[in-house]
Image (cartoon, rainbow, N blue to C red; front, side):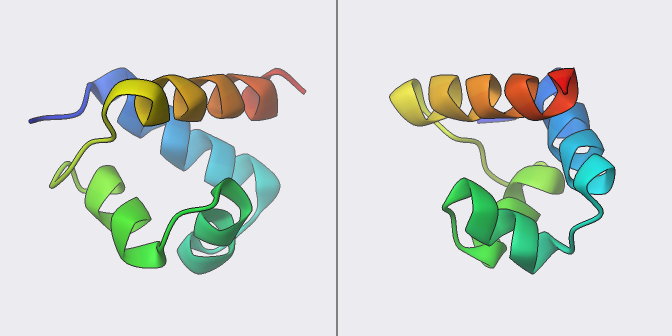
Length: 64
């Protein structure tokens, strides 16, 4: 499954806004670094509730 460009854009924008490395941002959102990298590179995508929760968390970070 291919992740939406919007979600990939939000991931990177939120990480950069906070000034965090991929490993630190992954820890902040509660996923392994490898998972975050896969999401950012469109190699994997969160599903179901994980997708919804991630979207909400990213929206909150970007809103501040």
